[in-house]
Image 1 (tube, rainbow, N blue to C red):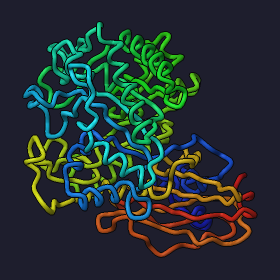
Image 2: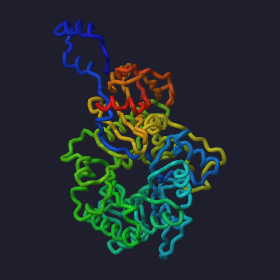
Image 3: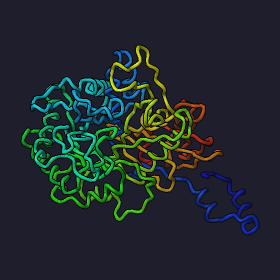
Length: 503
């Protein structure tokens, strides 16, 4: 517990050591305030986001009013989550055959390149519409990624994977054609739709052996040597179309940190063309021992590090435990993983399908096509994960800096300094215990008092604004956190007072 006790009580407890079993070192660690200072920074932060696969294929089928409502909930900074990063899925499925009927609803994202070599850009208008809605509401960074090459480029003739999930499914003769497809999509969206992809990622969990023919989603295994070759070809294709350096390359989006490290260490010449390392976060724990931290590898190589996919849900969507699990994951990825962006998988999930307990929002996806979508007023269920995400995304945004709070694993602090040197600070803290606990934070001395805004998500609250608290001139903030809750503290230090907090 993070407690703040009077010194008279300390002396009484010290006298009790040996009788009641109290540890003086434990007491002292509880009593020392956690220093949160603007002069002790960790990493620059680029924002929170979501992948559009596959929910955008579904949402794009809905009536305009419903599409707007979903877009507001996810991307509007005032009324919703204000997500600022969008990952667009370049599809590989054949919409004219029954080969993709094994896939879950809306997971067969269409290839805009047809087998005859022509393009039909309208095939993916639904996903594009959601992406444009995100841009209209303030999304700043866009990444294009592929789960599988177009079906006709694969060895199996199907984008769900090879017969042997441990074998590459992209035919070697189609390496150049594949990267040409990716870069033509990037080029089209830049020139015709006014969407510039900052990065393009050709893989999705490429080392996985689960991408087998008949899988319920698109997927493709790539050996590390194959990845290295494709990444180099992708760089050449971007250059040839005049897309670089505005559009760079991200890789390799493995399923967890350890696999991402193993793949990174196998790359050869591809290392020189990668701008960003993307990793998924499906490891059991970030405390898993690895030989070299991925954050250190990325930093030493001069690459950005993004957490590009996580989703989970083992509880009822309205249970606070599902929100606490999400917050725990975020804390681990940003504090232990050192990532510079955090992107959820599907912000909207099919309430009746696989992953029905995942997602910020749950909706009934129907079966395998628009004709199965229930009309007209489709219910939207807002989960505790949504409100937990809001505790972070509504306050810590693109351009903020994560501050060092290593001594408190349950607290994430961040700051933003504007052009007038006013400093905005947000602190998000999580209490997963069944009893209350207390904060004991030291922000440095202040020239005046500040009112700190307080927001909380718990079993009965949904990012609810509470009565503000006074931050006194000594800069110490003490607050009681109720059990099973996520609480955000937000305030702005005026320029003349900000200097005092930098110590």
